[in-house]
Image (cartoon, rainbow, N blue to C red; front, side):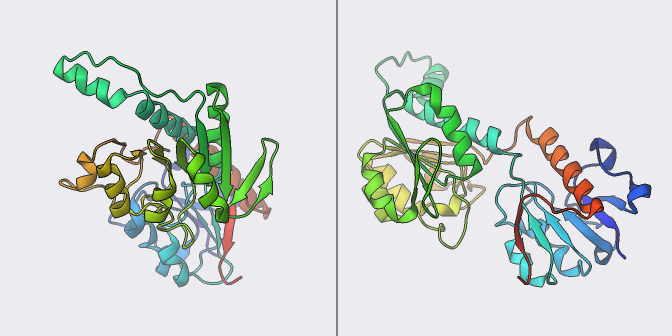
Length: 317
């Protein structure tokens, strides 16, 4: 029986981990370095290094012939999906639901407020010693549309609540009811987009959402609307977005881009009306403690033979 657990944190940094000797486990530290910490064939529980990209995430997977669990430290799993076909049946893939909601929702709100209130223009004005006063849009009395209403979308609405928005509409893959109001299916987007002053993307990247925000989606947004993307870069068609930005019809605030990292010289860097942050939605001081708590809880359940949290798929089923 294989007992190796690959962790991107040193085991002594994770309070509450099952004691290795008592649990029959061998903890191995690997954060994506060129050398593996042990034979991948002996790994039963693989915690994917955080924010190291697809190439590193999937590199050991084909050799992990005894693997039982893949645990990401991200809400999305798109960076490990290319390695899933190489896995044996019965491997559980778990995401990091509960780790990134607060940080990502904070950034979604920060990007929204900064864009509406002209913060980038003020920063530039400070650098140039120019006093750029005037009237700027407020978030108050605005209509917001959240596209992708999972745990992160819900956390974004939590933080919108004190800002006196006129209304908040919600969209997910399928319709459902919540205490706050209805969640509309993706099919309702054409009728919802024209009324939204701010459109916030927090949807996972999947075949149904790749390129979701294309020319037709953007054309349905009202003049002067703001697009905020804290989801994944390929959810948005970059060429179509550039056309709208260059026309001056809409503005955008992007924590993620396609391509990513955005290379020097790319026209998106200097497009009018765009604010770009370098994919830092979950990269805050809140990440480490929450990620470690998740790993301790998951490994405790794994050792006890209990159902794991956040299982998004099981291979071969």
